[in-house]
Image: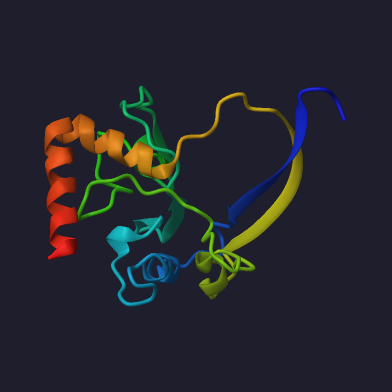
Length: 185
């Protein structure tokens, strides 16, 4: 193995558009898995996967939530699929200031697909397990990648930063104080 390289397991969910029928079972299963407590409710707005649909042409594209970005992208391309035009945003999994897709509906915190990390680990993410037509498949592979010097930021830190930018430090502090006081009482 080369110096500065390490092996990493890369997890991926592949989509076969020819098999997707737009049933949204993936959205429902994801939202139920991530409900508090787990499986207590379904709210597709909390799902980390969304199906973009063109009902007239029967085109369904499952999109998974990716990383958060504090800035809008510069991509303004359009794609034509069977005669209908889509903006590049339609197929983007990033949570950004331009839209509410992949943001927690109550808090506005960005959502990100976690491949349904759990203890004990799931064999496959929930969306893959429930897909009735095998449009979603799960794959793990090993890759050599350069060692990262910086630690990756925790999801909580990214969320707090987003709330701070939106509401200001003082409002976030006040909310945390109110929450801690309500738990005591």
